[in-house]
Length: 251
Ligand code: BMA
Image 1 (tube, protein in one colour):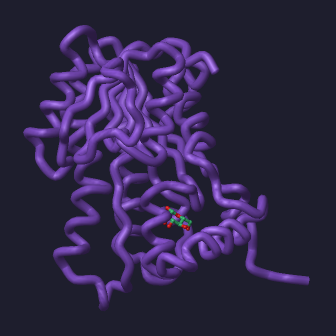
Image 2 (cartoon, rainbow, N blue to C red):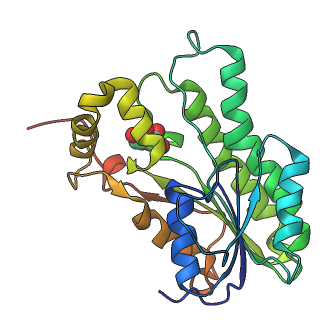
């Protein structure tokens, strides 16, 4: 895929999972890239991609990532893919755990966009990685579902506020995707020995009969970043193997 129009992109949470798959796709298309993440990338880009150690809870670290990304040229793309998942109902979720999920999944996106938008001096595109759980959810994910729901509303607000700056803002809503985050959930519930089967079972919940691959989400992110999506803003795209199209009704 040709990522037309995109030259300089910053990816928060680009060290693994959907963020990393996006980085790989953009890198292979010649985009100048900066990855901001608390962890070092799981893939070796041979110094061809800038890496900034960044805890998205810190405004200073988030801003440092933007200034690193804009050393050579204006920023024209931002992907926010940092995220964590914790389990529990409102009653069973500890308050500090709720706060942590909001800080990383939602407040971090606010900080990233706050720092990056003024640097998108020639316009640009932002993609926030949300979840199908922003629209419909399973039991025991109250904090995570709330964070992703808020991300949707935040994206809409930014799309409206910054249309005049020629900045488009969209979200992608993945179903279950084979990432370190989902694998650690599978280990939590299935234990080391059953986690692979559990992942497969989660895949079977999707009409296509499998979990998604991070590269399949990256394809949509790259499209939304590119000029091919020039009339798309304030929109949310499910990429979920049919998960949300389905009613749990059997004939
Ligand atoms: C994702 C994560 C996964 C989950 C999927 C579908 O955002 O919450 O753990 O399997 O949504 O509900």
